[in-house]
Length: 188
Image (cartoon, rainbow, N blue to C red; front, side):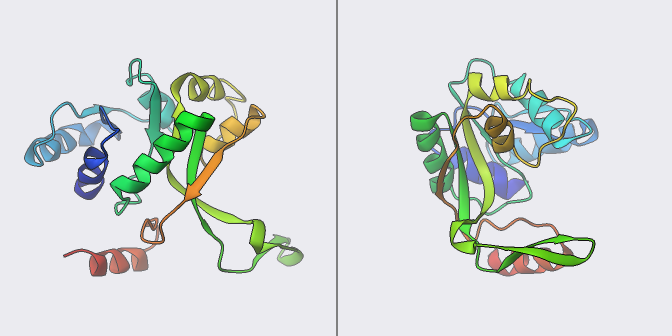
């Protein structure tokens, strides 16, 4: 969390930070922010699904023009990447970071390959993702019963485009124990 807070705060375009996390962690996050010299970091409780947590954060951003959604599971995000998705969202309304797929991707049903997808047209999407605030709020009203793996999917459901900026290989998602080992090797 310290890495994410520092990197997000270092992005020139970021005006305020809202951390969505369990209420039991609010005091620890606030203390961490103070220790890092960051003031004005707000904490709000999340929900049972990812989209519920993002919606809780959206209720706290006030009248921001652009909102950035970033997962703490990507602690090595660069301020430059945050600024790039913000700039693209200012132009297009919605933007995400993505890196080209280097693996062959196959669609599987019942344990059997049914299709090989052309990887030259595939990207692995990352956060940060940035949106015009009214657009993201509107997108969150669609199909509330269905969860979404990211907020770009909600914008896609509106039938609107999402711009893609080049992501960063180092903006890796920490999901598995071996990812933590990799992360420790990246830090001073």
